[in-house]
Length: 473
Image (spheres, rainbow, N blue to C red):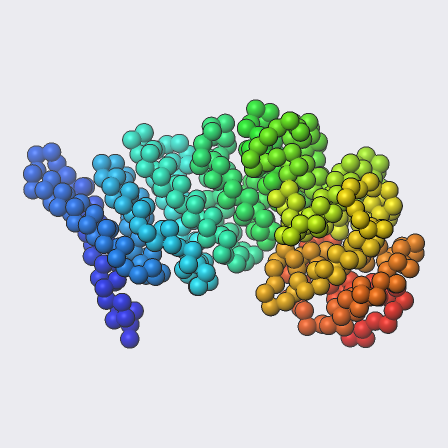
């Protein structure tokens, strides 16, 4: 049985609307002020289209229903609006259809649908009229409708992205669209515009998917982010968004390299007093949130060979990373300053390859609200708390935390002065042995960032350093 046979009513409405929009477009092209027949035809087509759009809400919330909404939206933007801006009710009605507000239920159910909708929505930004809008070349009378369309597109991409499982090359063919977005932001960054804020929120989320970072680098994000950070008169919220994207890019080794090559470390240091102003009160980026972002970004850009000097010059950064980790560990959701504990812990993992940093953090760094007898005990107990992170219902942030903690404790275990404390922690040893002997958690390797090893390897390394029997596998 064909899809048409299964869904006759839906496909009938799809084809009817598609044909009506085509006839409507043809009538608009042929329109003449002296031809009353065509004027009447336009009016009839217009009213028929509006009535059919209203009937969409009577359909079930299915992917087929969404396809109707998408087709009308795209056709109006690409084919009707370039001819005339007089028929805005088509756009208003299609934007208000109920399925737009119930899309999440469909995204949860079908991964292939989610991917299809993401790319088809992103492709809308490549329509000639949308490119004109992004470049500021649209007709003035079209601006309001294009802003409404742009807002919907960004909101939809943001929603879809939360349910999307991204793959390495997903944005390779979309880099031209990313460049248009960068130029649009750059031209409008000083305007207190909700669309600019929407775009930054979307780009923050997308750049957090480290697998996509190479595409953002290729699109020129590093150059633009650094240019924006050097603008002293930007709204504080926009500055916060810039440093957030800076940090996201730096999480990937390619991103850190590109930022360093573009003098990112100097630019970041030059922004210190402007970004870290304790007197600034902002809903999205308060002082603690901004300080943690700054410290993590700074640490990710420091090259390993620089880290000996890092201890001397950046003790306050190390102190804050440790304190943020401790603070997050006391929260039910393991979040502090709006960041999961995995964020500062991953940064500490990179820094803990240097002996001087390990000794400073464990022996000297001052901490508040710390009930334990030692920081070695803190990291060991934290690993125990996250030992269930690789379950069937695994949480990516928790799995990343566990991986990072294994790497941190492996680094600690190379230091003789901390061995006895680890050797006498029976629950810690049992946990490490469980992972060292279990090679079935191969999926955990996707949580391995640069400067990190898989859990199995780190666990065996810890046991070797502690003089325990290790897996022969």
